[in-house]
Length: 283
Image (cartoon, rainbow, N blue to C red; front, side, top):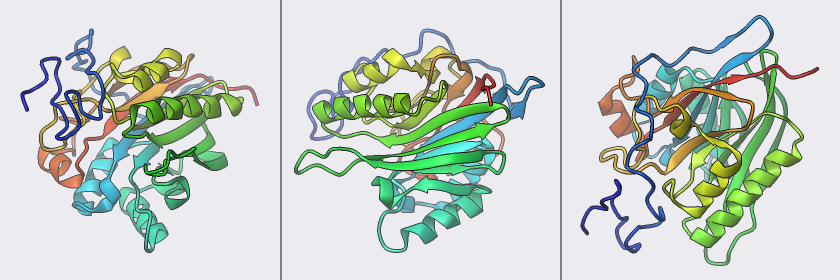
């Protein structure tokens, strides 16, 4: 099929716009920042700079050494994984990924139908919940891996998601994700995942209507997340709630320790890394 003139290519066999839905603008309104992404840290008043990584890892079916190198180089506090191993010895595989990436498992995996949360030891986990979303007969089960955490003086509700290939179901799942974050009662929220559509899609627009599309707010690094070998569309994102300052977000192209070869070998998606400044929460 011919390339989509709005900046993405159709997905084979899925209609003119593919499962990603309508394409959004080809480029962000603001050019990507040339400055380095800020490191993690805690400010004197308890404000936390938190690095959040979203990554579809295709069930670790690719080069797992490259995958671990990419994650380590991103130095994340929180990793929102999609397509974590879900079948035979899936907990062992998740633990190995965490160990080789210098992280620990928080929650998710098979119990969330694929989404998984990892964290650094800087993160204090208050609670976790794996959520299975309502499923349309004939489509894959989808879910959320969620947690309430503290980093420095900041309290944060975080969710990893992988939304449906069906546009109507995808919109319902976006609504469910927002409802779950709101139900935590935590004032600051973050979600990251494979949205399975471009920013012009209804599900993406619904998320960006209540949360900040971090790349659109402060682009950094690369834009396109799919595919890893031929990046031409942005279907993965990090979304930050009101009150959180986005310091930068994008594919970690050019980040020290992240090579193009590793990005291509690690998975069929490219990761999205965001640095967020989260205000302190009352104790």
